[in-house]
Image 1: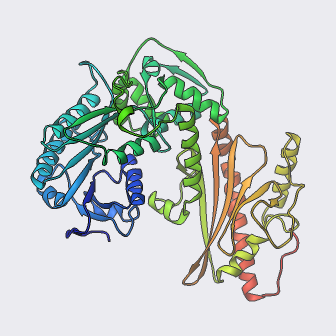
Image 2: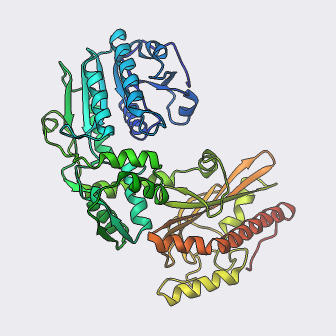
Image 3: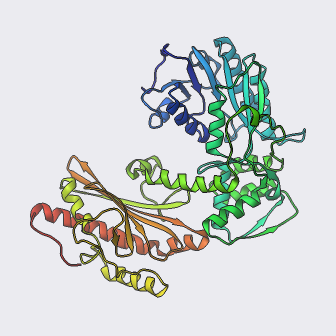
Length: 497
């Protein structure tokens, strides 16, 4: 149910603010798995329709509009406050202060039993404006009269987190980096899985009064260390040249050019990293059962989880959510570049999928086979597998089968074929075909996916992109012709390239 202003009374309600955010989205799924009765707030509930399960209630509420909060907090036992205004264009400190005050007063009036807030690590009086605001929000919530658990964390490592995406972009794109002083400031990163574990447990720990818990992984490292570890796991060699200055303004504009971090967000982030963010109070170790993983494993998990999430992507949905299906060079998803196109054919999915099922080997690639053969020959010259492997059966495929210099990674009969490239490349590549029924027949979607390694990988993609467009567009059109021909002549089988 998308919106329900009449809460169910069967079980205590857990309220989650910020469910559309990075941490909030992952916490929502963890609470769903736990079986909690969850109510999410959103300024626009429709934005959460694809993220929630059928048992989650969504209500309209905005912490900057106090009149929207009483109904949202009615009957709530535990409330998660995961809101901050770092990405806003106005005075984010003032907005954070107003939002926290409104929420605290409404929670007290509604009889909420517990507030859980995620803040930021930092000590001393010379804090950045961002950390100072995070601490102020925590203080306002603690002084509400509602027992509050404030978790203070440093860098969050996980695919999609602001800090991790900044590190990834810098390392992937810059073989040589001039690194300002903030790159060497100490931090105590925490993996997103462990952070979510703390947030879930915070709902159950004994609590008589408000408490602050500092949480982090076992490793005290710098952004520079994280960059080097990410580079190691990606097989990249990077040179870092330190300079003895700290210029958040200049650095944030630089980040805006080479990373997905907007300049205004980068400025606030970099303003914060001048402060050490390490755990000094180890009380959380005695209260929570979470055993945080180290930096190396956290980065490994981030990359593995990204592969898993990416593999579940439905491109018809994902590309439309990007706002545009086509753009020069493809659409980026995390570190990957995606080029996707569709064609509609007057054939049912089984017929439309047939030429896809037979691709490669003696049948060939339906368009410019000489270019595929040339690519295979060049691959052999650099020690790759080339095109000589063919395929084990002319009509049938199974996961694990070879198709020239590809390997079948996923096969759903009459629906999906995913090929993983095994030629020599400066990165990883996949070619995916999807067939879905349409009112006029079927839609065939062809998607080329490339995960470049370093600057060389990106240069490879963009230099060859015009050729890829020619080949992949010609291939898709030829597959469509095969499907149409099969409708007109069911006995026709393509036997040569």
